[in-house]
Image (cartoon, rainbow, N blue to C red; front, side):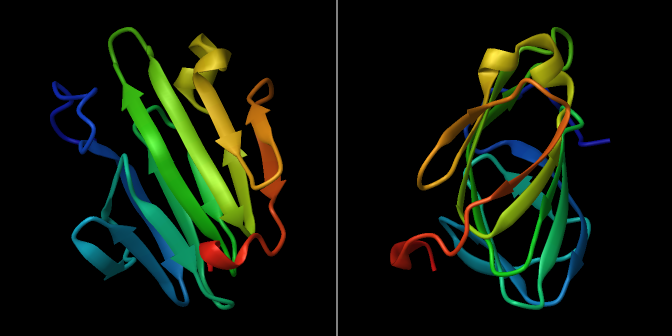
Length: 142
């Protein structure tokens, strides 16, 4: 579904896909800001930013589902996944706003390999579904 996975551990490989998007949202990456659209690849270093009317649904290659709410800034800091062994890593930061998570194969195989950070906490994944509310975050995240 996500194409060739032989470079699963490459830093700039596709981590997943945008499944749906509403309102105003952008993907920030080294090449600049891009408007979010369904079907767009999400890279292992992308930052998703939504406005007050925006929301974005993302499916990562390990079947983790992320739902980024309005007025949010979420960075995918690190992602790697080996589909044969289900080994890898997922580190994401919620700088401001909200994100709902339904964990995938990585957290089932290696819960210690999955971490979500907020400005005030680091969350290890032990459950399968949860919501992160980072509030307004810092000025630099906006």
